[in-house]
Amino acid sequence: MLKDLYLKEVEKAIDTAIKAGKLGQMTEYTANSLNVEKPKNPEFGDFAINVSSLARNARIAPPQIANAIVENLKKEGYEVSVMGGFINFKTGKELLAKAIEEIFIEKENYGKPKNVKTEKINLEYVSANPTGPFHIGHGRWAAMGSALANLLKFYGHDVYQEFYINDAGSQIQKLGNSLKIRIKQELGENVDFPTDEVERKNFYPGDYLVPVAKKFLEDNKELMQKVQNDVDKIDLQLVCDYAKAEMERLQRALLDNFRVHFDKFYSELTLHQSGKVEESYKKLEESGKLYEKEGAIWFKSSEYGDDEDRVIKKADGSNTYLTADIAYHKDKLDRGFDRLINIWGADHHGYVARVKASIEALGYDPNKLEVLLGQLVNLVINGEQTRMGKRKNMITLDDLIEEVGVDATRFWMCMRDIDNTLDFDIELAKKSTDENPVFYVQYAHARACSILRNAVNDRKDTQTGETIKAPLTQEELDNLVNNYDKTLIENDIDNAKKLILKLEEFKSTIVNSAKNRTVYTICRYVQELASEFHSFYNATRVITDDKQTTLARLSLVWAVKSVLEQGLGILAVSAPEHM
Image (tube, rainbow, N blue to C red):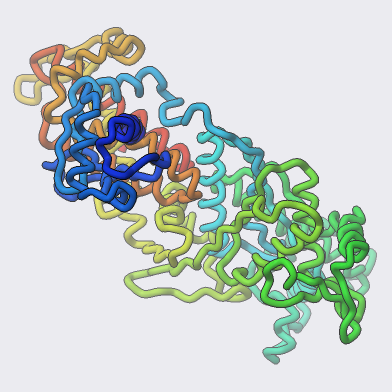
């Protein structure tokens, strides 16, 4: 990466200047304590390093420090200037040409960092109750979680994607009772959900159970004949199991359509049945981390950074949600994962400390757990936010995908930092204009593909009707891609510098995005690359009368196509060749 190159050059020069006594009272330098940034004014250079922070130890002025460092720089392939405490770098043609050459050499591996410390990661996200359709909030975690998995895999990590099914609580019985009412309605009985607000909370009155009721009757004709259509004679557990299985089937089908693929769907119920919940409880008890108060059993989580102790077994003997979560995270660590990454909603903020406390209390490293807390999604329709309810009148992820498509839904869901609320503008997401970010990026890829096609296809003169021979043969284009010669671009680089620097930035974007778990920066990058490419195309004729110039510029077009495809691939958004 050019950023790394310049930083290493400066750090070597600092060490040399220190040994020569040119940096005042400074006797040592801590590696990576300086940052590479872009100058606010591009006329100053392509990159800049502010060395003013060294003045604290050097006891000399920042400009003096900068000039002492510059004196010891090699200045091979770049130009240097000093402004105050800033060292500015202008990248030369040879380095720029090498940057393009690397894309052709690495191809689909371009941007993958080398010699990095990799980890075996368990990435858990979505983890919705199997009691109904996914709402748009689930859609955000699904898109971001799967894109983060793609990013971390591309970086080099071993990523295992997991969905935790909350199927051990009273909600499954509520679901079964709700389905019974819908079945009775299908049979013509005059029955409905309670109107009392408190009682209604014990049911799921959404219309999504109507087709499930129809399917139940179709799948259980013999049973219905046996009970003579008396639904109350049917074992509730059978109805509960059917409803849960159907909800899980629908959820998994939607995830598959949404390009989200989990390695494991982990049932909370099986966690209890395996004895792992009781095992974790006993381990905490034996280590003196539990105590009884007011008939309940409490976990001493405050000893590990939580703001108060937490109940893990209620006075009636039933477990709290925390009890199973403790066992679940212990099980993940016992499976040998180096790191656990969970994506939770922002309303789980207070839950992080108690889970980390339990991990430490059980003898594991709490720093192995990372929790990404995500804000909600506001759906904007015709300029107005639309509220959604969890039980009725719900705007589902299915509805959204049907309205705007998988590509737009995924891109928009990943487009903002997880810490920020997302305003999803449906009308804008549907537009085939530059205003719509996903269209803008996809159109850049399609434009690049179109240029490459036009380079090898004969065309008709619209006025004379004569056939105009293609400037290149397919063989010549293939040779350009497979046997790239960087001297091509060295001779035609002036109009393409900004585009080349943006292409080269993909490498640092991958590293920073993976380390910071920031998928949105990939969205931002491909938008910026698309913008630079559109600007380049509008200002520069790619297919010219000179074959060498044409080949040089086509190499840039192919590089843009390749990098956009990589970026969109991480987001699991398609890269169309025609639009």
